[in-house]
Image (tube, rainbow, N blue to C red; front, side, top):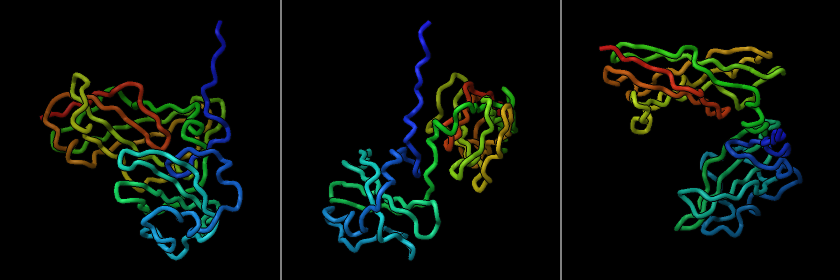
Length: 241
């Protein structure tokens, strides 16, 4: 029998904001803010990002990722230790477009294990295979997060129960952009889950796209962005006249 191949990401990767970076990128003292943006015209070395705030770091900056984006020919992710929140890092994207380099607004995040590492042993399931709602009302769709591993699971600060419900017609064709039904914002982090533990998470319709569906039968896929988990099957949603 062919041995199983370990497809886990390298152990030295961490998630910082929305990016997976080598943890070694956070080592060392870094450089000054003027030093990190020097040579990126038309930016002035004294320029700060929008909403930089009074606690914006002046020291400790380094490039943690170089990437390309659909809206820019080159993107740099800059990071420095937060001077306000211990354990957090301030990240700023620097994009190069047709008119030169542009700074995006900063964000503050702690380095955590990658989504793939954090979700190991977890699965997202529908609480039921069928749901129904009267026409014009918001459907409540329950999913269950299950710890199928033999180890306790504890959420990080980045793990929030914010679900997407992606709507399809009865033939499985996605409707437009999917008629996303976003889970409620402001939810607390997940509870800790012992081996075999379960937590109910709800997808609630907060968009006209879902509450305005015509009477009929639809299929819904649930997606949990914070852990990059999807339900393996689609649930049936019946909208009654």
